[in-house]
Each structure stands twice: as structure tokens, then as C-alpha cells.
Length: 466
Image (tube, rainbow, N blue to C red; front, side, top):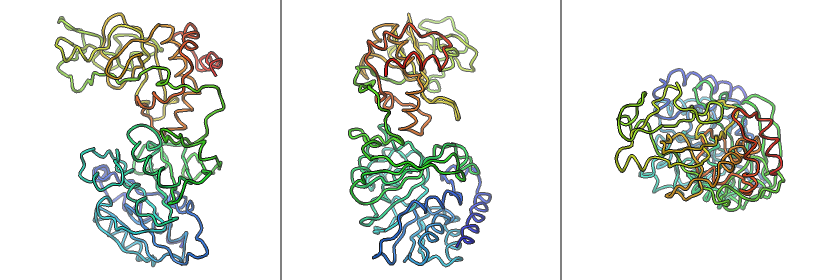
């Protein structure tokens, strides 16, 4: 069967080369490399003594490489593998590939979200599409829980088809582990199944490099049983690198209230508060530039109500500089009731970038902001204030805004975020959950902030807070 897996790897490459990039993007296809398929199959448990034959399911089977890896893992003990594939071309490739090496299987051509048989299955493997799923998508009604993305919808369908003590291994992004978008999925998956194993990759580029997928990819194993006491976490830099193994108590990785999942336990420190519990509120910048093209300008016009429009690029050294030649129009005309409501009023805030670049050193990047007049904050920025989602109130002092910016720029916070999220996107919901010392402690260190302060000095100044 090792030879069969090698042949499946060649078939995968041929399938990729025969498919246009436009089609792959439309169907969110990223076929599984051989090394990752082998690792996925290895994450399943050995069969129990009373299990002679098992039924298996491959959701979104692609060219069939995961089915072959699964068959190799349980050679001689698989009754059948049910393969589901929506692409007619790939379905034909998959069917022929499995038949050529004698894998007992049946193939269903169709949408896995609506056409997956009821099962139950003892082993389920999937590398689903990564694509947003609309809240009003008609398929939502047939899912066990609301899903923000096709990949979590596929996982939910798979979990619902597991036999008692059955196991599912999925190759997915890490974004399901935290944030409000995936809260319904976490409630379903962690409420009715056991999270047993996690494998994370250090590189965002290598796993699906030949299909141009840039993603923090992980492998995860669930089983239909009560939550196991421990979770095994493994990690490698890329798909062919050495694997490090750790084992943690489940209660150290799964937050009891939010069901946020970490890849490492919290550090043992004295910080019990969060941004939200300290009375702070993160919001998203209200000005969406591409929706306001008629109101934004490269040069400041002679017109009433023109205000500065602020982007992340306006903080090159940590402090606001405006205007700057950053390739963005930086003037916003707010001259009616609707546009004026998009402005952020004078006062002190902390701005947090919503997106970091592909391989940027830090995920969480924050800047203190003091403004003496209303400005427009562009939608790719979050800002932290002292009010509520529908009522923005500036922070109490400039010292607090500077101290909070220092804290959010620490290596501690960046490591915390990476432990709970593989995403380069930092949303308001993520900021709410970030650890936060008492506000008076942040205010006390605010005087240490200065433009261009080094990472080493930031960490040293903030060490007293922990």
C-alpha cells in the first residue's frame, strides 16, 4: 500500500495541474499532500479487539489520497469507505484511484452538506473547503449548528455521522478555536464530542504550497464520547519536519465559558481580568473606504466637514502621523447625519490593527491615539474605548491609552493570541477576551511609552504587571 500512496500523490499533482486556478478558487480546492494525508491517518486510534471491520467516510474526497491513507492505516479491516465529492472531474479521478488499488468503496457525487449518508461511521476523514458560509445559506438549516465557514459545516456534518466511540480527523484552519463566529460550532463540537488530539504547523505557507493556500493549518481529532481528561498536542514546522509532542489536561486547553481552545496552557501568572471585565470595549473602525469612494480624497478638498481618515499605515513609528504617502486617500468628507456618525470623537483611545501581513512578526499590533477633533477610523482598525458597542466613550486619560498600548504590544499578549488563534485577523471579540491588568496599573506605566520603543523594552516595562 505504500506504493499506492506514492501513486496517489502523483495523481494529486496531475489533478492540480489539470485544474485551472479559477476553478480551484471557486470550489476552494486544496488537495491533501501525501505527508499530511499520512499524518491524518496516523492520528486515528488502533482498532479495539472486537472491531474486525469498520465503516469509513471521506468528506470532500478530492483525488482520493486521504481514503488511500486511511485504508493503508487499517489494511484488511475496512468494510467500506464512502467517498463524497462535489466536483464531477475529481469524483471520476477518485473513483478510479480507489478502484485501482482495491479499496472497497462507494462514491457519492454531490454536496457533502446535503448528500452525506446518515452512517454511522467508525472513522471519518476530511480536508474540507475553506470558504465563508452565508448566514442565509439554505444549507444552514440542515446543519447541527450554525456555521460561519464551509469547513466547520463539513466538520459538523461529519461529527453528526460518527458511531459511538467513532473518530473524526479533519485538516482545517485554526480559526474555529476562538472568536464569536465559531462559537456555535464549538458549543456543538465540544459539548457532544471529545477533543482528543491537535497537530499544528509552524509554517503558514508550506502545507498547501502547490495550490497557493496561505493558512494556519491544523489537524484535529474528535471522538464520540465524553471529553477525555487529556489532549495530545503535536507540532511541526512543516509537513515533512520532526514532530514535537506534548500532553495537557483538557481543562487547561478548553476555556469553560467561551469554549475557546488553546494549543498550550495559560502561563501561571496573576492576571485574572480581561479587556471586557476591566470595563473596556473594542469596536471596529466605522469608515469602509471602498463604500465611500465619493467621500474620500487623496488631497484635502476645500469643502465643509472634511476630516482626517486614519489607517494603520498612519502609525509608522507607533504614533499618529497624518497625512502620509501610504497609497491611501486620507481625507473623509462628513457633511450629513449618516457620515458624521461614522466619525470617532475627540479623546484618547487605543488602536489595534485588524489584519497583520502574511508572515509579520507580531499578530497583535496596538497604537495609542489622542485626537483633538473628530476623525474617521478606517474599517481595518479596531479601537478600544471606555463605553459600550453603541456608545463610544474615550478612555479616561492619555496615560491609560499609552499603558494599554504597551501591554497589548507585549510578547506575552502576542503569544497568548497565537495560542488561541491561528488567524492573522484580530477581531473585536478576540480583544475582549485578552488578559488585562487593572486599569490603574496600566495608567501607571503609561509614561514609559514613546514612539519607536523596542520590543525588549516593552516587555521589560510590562513585566511588573504580571
